[in-house]
Length: 298
Image (cartoon, rainbow, N blue to C red):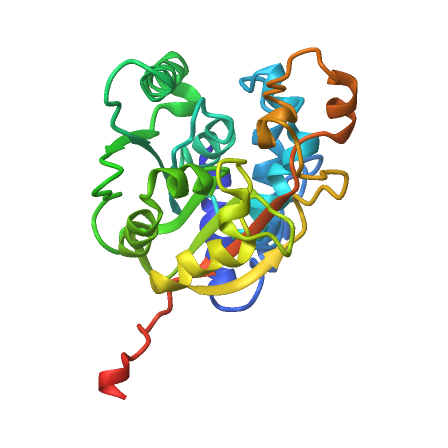
């Protein structure tokens, strides 16, 4: 990002904080024949998201999934900005890393929080793959940080050091491992007051109980909300950005029956491809600026 864009971002962010827009003089000073830059901080973020989502460093396989994952709309819903400190929890092979790390490369800070591998396995492969991805392309990932954490006693950095914590399709794994309450408490600790937790996961039917869906990959939305609010968060908004009404949620191998996993292989493959990826909840929580008073202090 060149110095003009960096200065423009600073002006836009200052303008956003004051409730206005960037100074009109910037547009008047724009050389003839050049594009006029976005005039608000949200416009600037949208423009930057468009650029990184279209980036040629993203793998074709990952880009093909944009139609199911709606990365621009999802990240805008979570309120991301290019100058934030963002912690992504358990990024797997780095699908969102390909967007988040370049977005935050110049003016923000991207932290990929990965569980410490207990041995060889998927977690170890994901960690090695993520480190290799970042090392191979310093132009886009040179400022990205990998942070290893203990799932049973998680910590994601200094208290209050993050603006935004994001996790995509991971909560069901923590529920299975019985580590979900500790994870949400650690999210709360690392976020600054007013910071945001963005959660996306496979959504169970409205009337489903946790016991009924446990092991399927799906979770009741009410249960995820309770995990967050028990940790101190306030649910700010829900979104249907990642909804899929074609998902019947009643498959022989749970959510992994659907793409991209397609656990059944060629069995009914066309049927599951036609359904697409799972129906997902998309939830935005906020860490209150002032912690709620306990019953004993009211």
